[in-house]
Image (cartoon, rainbow over all chains, first blue to last red; front, side, top):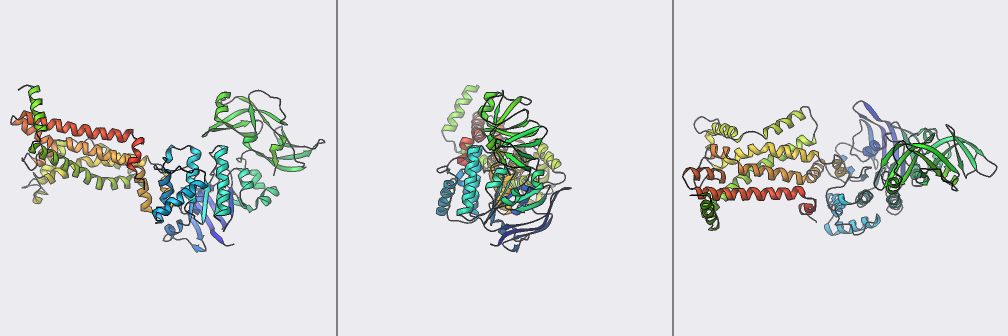
Length: 353
Length: 239
């Protein structure tokens, strides 16, 4: 398999800040590469440079073995497309949104119609052609954005946190479509994410990016297998903790993650480990409830982020935990900043990397 | 003659299809329409350049255009009269004074700041990521700029309608550089004034009714556009 895109010594400065620092990266034909890193690590900038909509301050970009120059940039841009984290749609119908790139490629009208229905079927929005894109829900708009990108059948598809602002249902659809696009359409995909679960299951390779530098590149098994220092240093990555594991007599393991917080996990391990808990696996309550959940922590709500139909909360329970609940539960529970809450999750929800 | 008599006679004139009224109305529409078109032709590119680029003094340039919206028509009309004056004006040799062309030029100048300022506002309101979106879907620089203009379309249309509105209702410039040549430069606004001077009050009233009806119709259209996301599909052809 050849390299579809290569970045050589790419640096990007904005004013006096260096956002990307001497990046060397190869994207292999047919792969899904995840750029895993905390917010502000330079993922979006790296994707925009790969999409050729941002010019690096220094360094070279090769596409299909050919160096991209000022002269060839508009032509080469046709070979890749990007889906942005914050969904952007044209103030037009879904049909015209998807048709935009196809018209630029001078595809005949009858074929455009076919392509659009095919792309909408992929993202499970059949029959949405005539709807106004801006009137759809956030999740549907992001799926239109993905359909718009897929319809172009580009060699390279760049996805910037495509599921970050979506509810679980829309996020699942997006992930399935992304995997299918790679499997069936053979599209090479680079996906930026700070979601460990996405990085663990979806990609063939992971590049760890932090402070504008790529620290490690490897397969998910390699990255998650050896206890990566970079990975452990991603404090901003949700619900990822390092600690010391100790097997107990009843077959479970206790992991001390510091600040007096101990987590019980179903896996058997000893020694230094990294664990993670999916934000949607955590049950939040105002009072201590008795349940089968082996882990119950108490803490204070320190951050509230409202999205489409879900609310993301950050709870300080000695360590910061991200919790995701539906907007309805949030309203019914009348939660606000500073509230004392309880977090409960099963031992099997604590995964050891 | 009392006002009611005048009104009745005015309506009789209008509904009789008086050829002179029709001619004046059509000329007014033509003159202000041409002025709005010319102002749009140079105003929209100017607005695009200002809105889509960052440069030193951008704020100053925008402020100047904003302030020029309020220029009194009498002042601009008088300045243009001096410029086009056949004997001493620097552009007198063009022979434009007291022609419809002179009025079109004057009105186009008058409404340029309106169209530039409103179009800048409309373009700047477009999500800045639209440029990147268009580019990543394959657009060239110019196609990407055009995509932004398309997003701002309803705002730009508003700018055009507002400009036309101002042009058709102004008197100062039409008086100074158009004069009152019957069958040649007479417009709805100048017509109202002249007919009143010579005692044809019912013609004045008829012209006023036509002018008000036109302006009202234009404002109604403007409101529909403003109200309008449900009308939006009309602005974007389904291909």
